[in-house]
Image 1: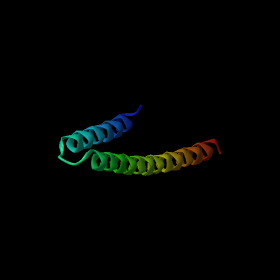
Image 2: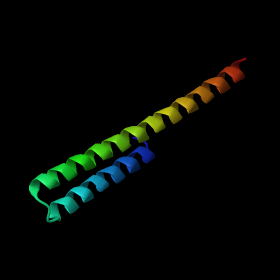
Image 3: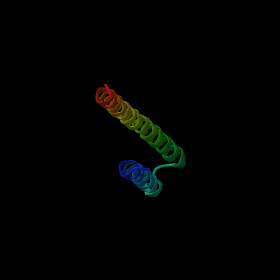
Image 4: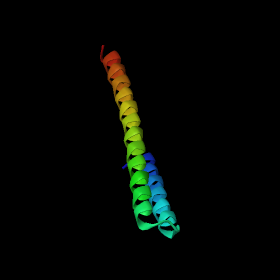
Length: 75
């Protein structure tokens, strides 16, 4: 994994763990807690997918630029 990917994964894991602990220590009922945890992880998953899609688009763009430069050098 690249350094940036490791950082993103670490931040997301830390946020998930922190939110879970905070919700577990709150005084909400069990059903409310389950609902909040479920919603949090759904939001986290959605945000992760968006972030990864952005990274994939950026990687594709860089790859296209490299191909263009290689073609220009070989021409």
